[in-house]
Length: 61
Image 1: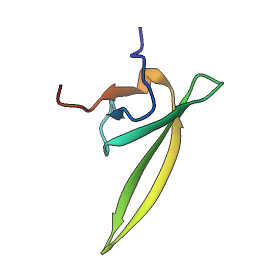
Image 2: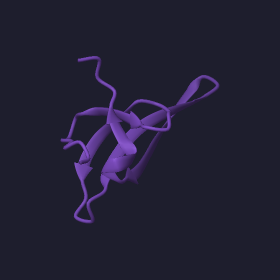
Image 3: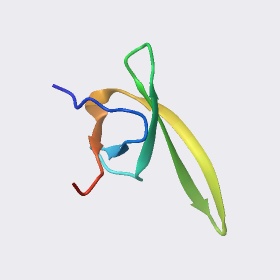
Image 4: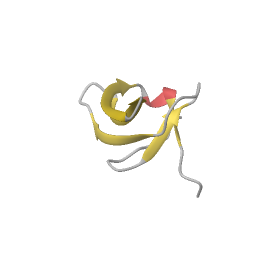
């Protein structure tokens, strides 16, 4: 069973990648996540929706 996530949770993809913040669950069952990519000295905001099975908690607790 996929982990139940809530807005503000810190997650990452099970396959790896940056830490992301869960923004909200979508009606389609996907979770909208936000993160930043670094390009030189600039940080660019990014977002995408993921299936719950693709995500895991990135919190140390």
